Amino acid sequence: MYDSLDSIILGRRSIRRYHDLPVAREVLETILNAASWAPSAHNRQPWRFAVITSPQERRELALAMGARLRADLHADKVPPELIEKDANRSYARLTAAPVIVIVCLTMLDMDRYPDIKRSEAEHLMAVQSTAMAVQNLLLESHARGLGACWMCAPLFCPDVVSSQLGLPADWEPQALLTLGYPAETRQSSRHPLQDRVIWR
Image 1: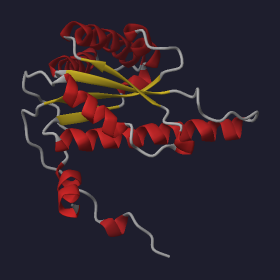
Image 2: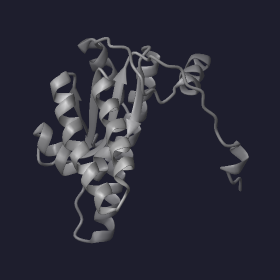
Image 3: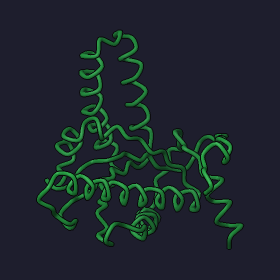
Image 4: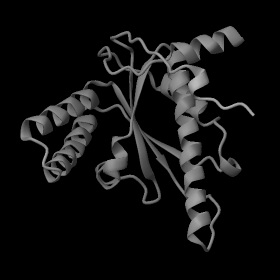
């Protein structure tokens, strides 16, 4: 069991190119169910998922997000050719993936406090909980022979994502995952553990 888990953890990669093959609804539900078994603050399970399999919906979302990206980069005075390169790369990634999962959080079931400090801590706990659900989703996807890539672009345009998809008002977009059967293999490495750990 441990060898199998280790191989899944160590074998997972961020995949950005996919075969043009649909992912069965049952497989997606299995992956999302694994995500829902992540630990969460107070066991409130604040994660929410919007799954997009329609090519038209993916294109429209990519166009809307791309328009905001162009506007932001233009305001930053980024050269036009670099803006187009960045926007076109983003559009290609979103439209070429058979599935997009928008990961959101909701504060509806989280604790409420009268002061800013504890309220911010509670929101951060929801963010952390949602990130743990994403890790489960990524690992289960890899275990099922799928590839996925975590993108944080919705953090820069949550209003665009919410409006385009008609999300409930309490859903706060946190991330975008592309998902499909991998059409590439990727290598990766990690910094030495001793550079990241303090023992006391």
